[in-house]
Length: 180
Image 1 (cartoon, rainbow, N blue to C red):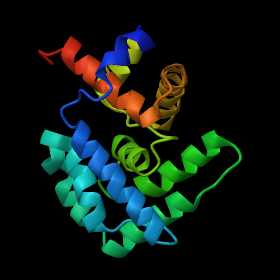
Image 2 (cartoon, helix red, strand yellow):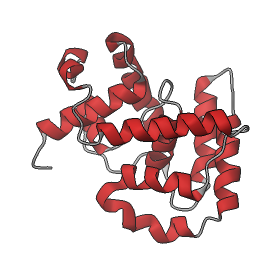
Image 3 (cartoon, one colour):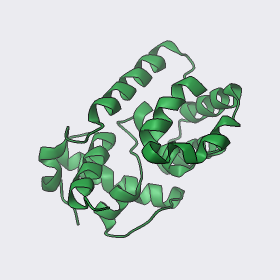
């Protein structure tokens, strides 16, 4: 089981750390200027490329079937959700985002983590393996909540955001499993 001490020296070590920071900054600026906050296809494209990497083309056809209006409406609805029960908020936000074609839980988690890094992180097979020692290639909302809970525990211990903690977990796993 990965511990906070395993992560401390890797906070800025991920190869895409700078790109991650740039995307977070871009979304922060958009959030300040677009009221209510929403994202369009052009705003989401770099997020899709960042999250999906070499698998970017796999869902491209499905994502291209979403209209710009659908992206605006779904993201606006997701970002407007404010629930007292955080787990209900998660379910609602993910529901709006995963209603978009080609956007599953992992991609929805990337959108939320970049737009709200203090609350969300990105789920993927590397992080799951590092935290739970299990191989998994698909994720539902239940998996995400379990993953986020563990990431948040570590983030409190480290004094980092869940997004920063998760990216560091990703890098730790990448180094530990270079053949994968």
